Image (cartoon, rainbow, N blue to C red; front, side, top):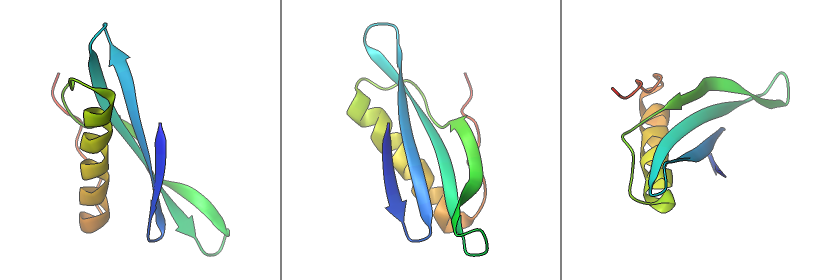
Amino acid sequence: MQIETVGKYQLHLIAHEVGDTRWDPFLAVMRFDEDAQDFVCAMEKRHVGHPCASYEEAIEVARQAGNRFIASGKPVGTAAA
């Protein structure tokens, strides 16, 4: 898992190993709340793509989904299985 801060958001980029050679990308997003002076959940962990060939590729897919979430302000749809 990697955590990246983009403005007032934290992207939790997650890759789960599937079998021996594939990685599924997941994303959770936290938003800094001024009143609480802490990060609060903006989007719970969800599957954001198809299995990837490497950990790095899955993290990149999650990063792209996180940036789309920040740009749109809307939750990322769950990928079809």
